[in-house]
Image (cartoon, rainbow, N blue to C red; front, side, top):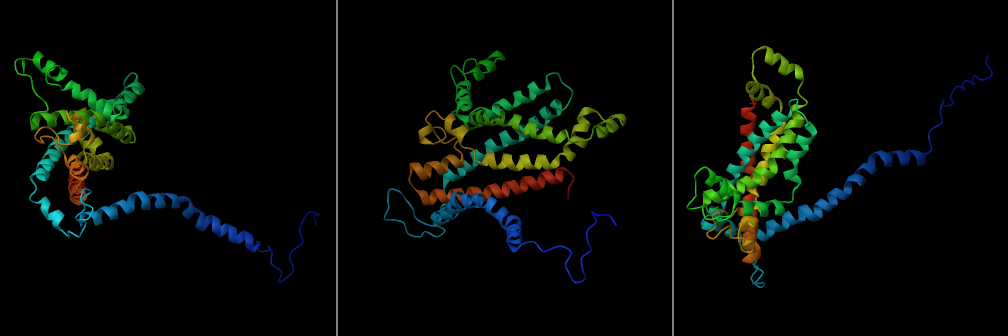
Length: 326
């Protein structure tokens, strides 16, 4: 027998001594309790700065709450919400919001998809192009919007100068802030310029996960680049497309900074001289902090929340259907 061989345990004696109770307690604490302690700060911050404002806003929407009338804070019930149905300013802002949303979201995602498809090919200075299309996204909104406000100026703006080169508006330049259609186009251009590159990089990251063999097989079968984009790429990156559609819906219906800074008098939050490009977010700000009617502004914010849920759900369903999912 080897001198290093251990002696077998006598019958009835445990082969391994149980760990100390303190070590067992620490093991259970480390595996069962520590994970909850690590994620607890997020939930505490969310409860204070997220959940509580939502609940408090819901309470305010059911009350008469005006800052200039502190004694008049009784319960209003559904009066604030029923008032929305006959409020011309609300329906005007809703129409402006949807108009700018359509002009910005649809071209934005289509152009981003095409740009991502081009960047997915073998190009020179690929990294430079990818960083370049992201520059508008990292540019501060205030700075870019002020530049575009000068670009769409009536008398000395570059937009009218470019149009005059093709013989349009030489004698009567377009006042981009005066009409609904022109102001919608100008604001939608600002939104598209900022977000096309961001969405294009999301699409590009999804495209690079598609095996190259799929494209090679499609090319052998005679599919051109355009057919490959719509028949192969789009269905295979459908989850990312769905994500960008929902994200663009939420951002587009909450549009605030661009129309606010595009106005010649941003402090009024009126969205032009006749509210021709005032969005719902602007109207909520105006009613709450200019007219000092917090109860009615809270009701508007909840109406906007429900509208975003409905539109985002419809867009998500339509995107799934277009991608072939039932």
